[in-house]
Image (cartoon, rainbow, N blue to C red; front, side, top):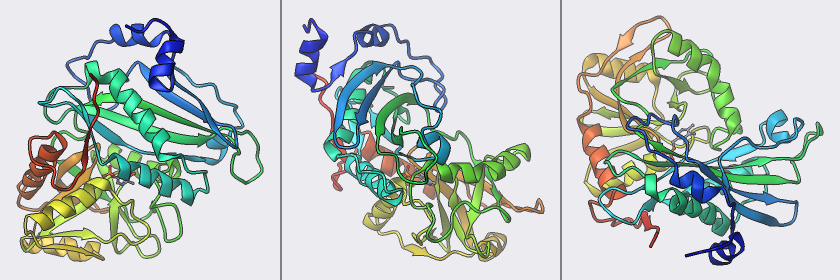
Length: 364
Ligand SMILES: *Cc1c(COP(=O)(O)O)cnc(C)c1O
């Protein structure tokens, strides 16, 4: 039994604030989780003073102190990740492709010229949250602990340059899958999310800001999410605001190639690997929206689905164009369901992990 914060720090390497054990002990996991509606009662924090990462701690979840002029607030100097810890059918929780999530955070940071968070610190933060939150990581298939690590510039000032000081935080949410039921997707013909040379490949808040107007308008028309097209022509498919897109055409899988504007989804990459392993024909290519609409109409495109850490694999019911015309493939959640089960069975450790994607976190 640990007795003091100092002893706990000696054991963990980071300080555990005295409020944390009580906050964790009194936390109750509700029956309905939604996605992000329930927040874990603790958070991991580490600050960068311009030279060193220091003051690593597990804190009670709560509001942050931040200068109003901080560059994260004024100039969106922020990069983030979204990953999950699973505890289904096993006592010890596990992460999925944690190294790849760190690598993408490093790539996102490089795009914004933010100093790269060392991998061991990233993993310490994520694992600290998994350990602290282990008592309420959902034990039901499809549910998990969503982890949101992020790094942001804390230095105030209007000069257009990077902040010299940063803060790394990990928050967490016990979640259900992001989308329940098949999605209605609005094709966006006017706004753009990302262009070549922009920040589309980085997981950064600004991309989401760019997507808000169309997303809000689509929501008003009863759709769940926006499908983005290329910036100059609005002709080629990019992705959904936080998910990558797949189509089944003539029985083969098609997905837009990573063209420098699309966020390289780890779920996308995992599905591609699983499809190749299972002998499915897969094409990463430039996909024209009008061609795809034609293929839905002619019956050649039989199924559409989206994927992402939050959504896992989510079927798409229809694409709806700006003029209101709806295009619905004839199948719903057939190949998508098969791929979802293949992926989930690795993530939840029901199937062998021949790709080396899963890492167990020993909690005792
Ligand atoms: C995070 C994200 C995705 C999905 O990536 P995963 O690694 O599969 O979770 C897709 N598009 C955007 C814009 C994203 O931010």
